[in-house]
Length: 162
Ligand code: GDP
Ligand code: MG
Image (cartoon, rainbow, N blue to C red):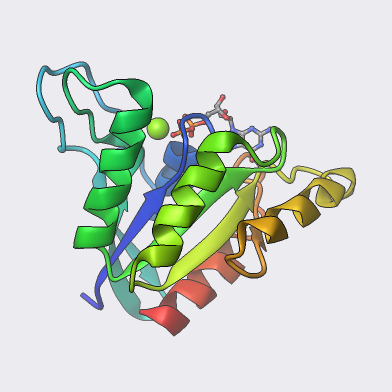
């Protein structure tokens, strides 16, 4: 195993969709267990003879926390546990306040961060990607989890940084 990669991002950007595509099986569905649920968020990805561990931090449920605080804690866990962090956003909704908050946090951490922009399902959506440069995390990797677009590029970049 080469290392650990975590996917972070606000709810509904497609973290579990991308996670399931990358590990090739549906593993990240999490049921409503009280407390902090951390099972079924781990998977293994094989790419070009390399294997790494993948975490869907969106599946980490933290009891009695407000929504924003839960995302905050998920990002903390990713920063602590991962060697490389994939920060997933969505071109469909554009840059949201929570994206900006997460970006600030990730900028301060010492781990490599890969900004990815999901839901770019067609060429017209490409226009929506440019505003993500404002997050200050470099070139967004363009993805469509729904159509399986960009996953090879993402994996190449992950292995470069791992
Ligand atoms: P999560 O909350 O970040 O884990 O997001 P999910 O993976 O559960 O996806 C949230 C919603 O976005 C679901 O309805 C998905 O079907 C949808 N979704 C995921 N990826 C894409 C995509 O590439 N394009 C579009 N249009 N929808 C997507
Ligand atoms: Mg999810």
